Image (cartoon, rainbow, N blue to C red; front, side, top):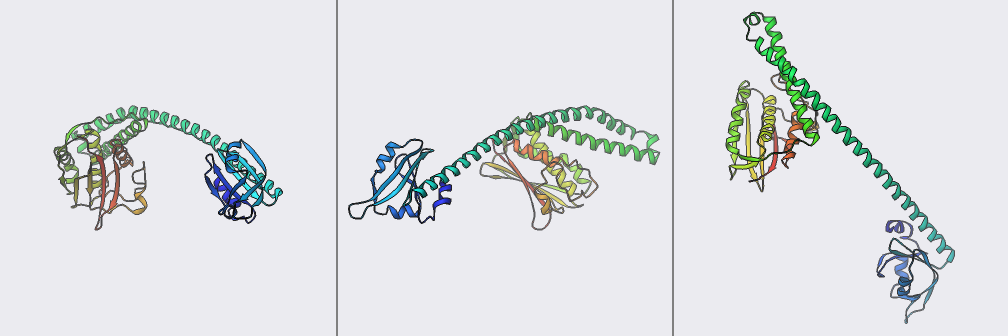
Length: 365
């Protein structure tokens, strides 16, 4: 209402307008009203009378006398309108103009009320649509989980049989059969990784993927993880270094999920790092958080990809340096797992070369 009156009357030379609250305090007055009542006051009716007589709609219509003992008194055509726990006072020298002004105020207020009602109606519609979308999304996640689970067993069998076939001398003596068996094993491994990622996505979106915290020795944990990743790094002659500077060795984390977070980030760093390079894993304490930083010497992340890199199947302009596969879901899952720990994740490019992936989780002891 205040904004409407400002729009209509702020600069009016003939209309004096004010809004008064229930206890008589002026909450808005245009310039003309301030000039009319400068060193003056309501003489008849008094402001106290107006406050006592107030009722919904136009409750006073007549003449108001403004002045004091030291000046000439002035009479104004006055209308007082009460709504929304406030009194709108309009003073003019012309009674017809006062009526016109009040009609404008009522008209604009009615339009404002109608818009407000329409907004409430549309808000309810949107809320209902959001509930339906959430229900459909849950159903989609459920079917996705079922499909991924059902496909995992047969594809796992294909991978196992391909692995067995590679041990047969007949296949090893045939270059063509060996190539086909290796392709079957490689493609089935990729399919299994994709299905496992889809199952993780399904669990996270369904809200059934809660954290189960237990005590973890961070230094021993990181040493073990880097040992597990060494064979992958050695294929490209990549060194993985560890730099830990924390006061407390142990903290409460969901160990399998933290392992998945770091494994995803480390395997990504290895995929996109050149041969004979170095990856540095740093863990630092900052206030009450634990910061994990993984720095590589790869090509970095192009600026156009930074905003989408943690989205499912987000923009991936760089290619792995040794033909490695990527499902496009790893970083998205990693972000969700960090958020389940109450943390945040991000990426930045290093000054010289490479990228720096980092995540922060609250310390719990």
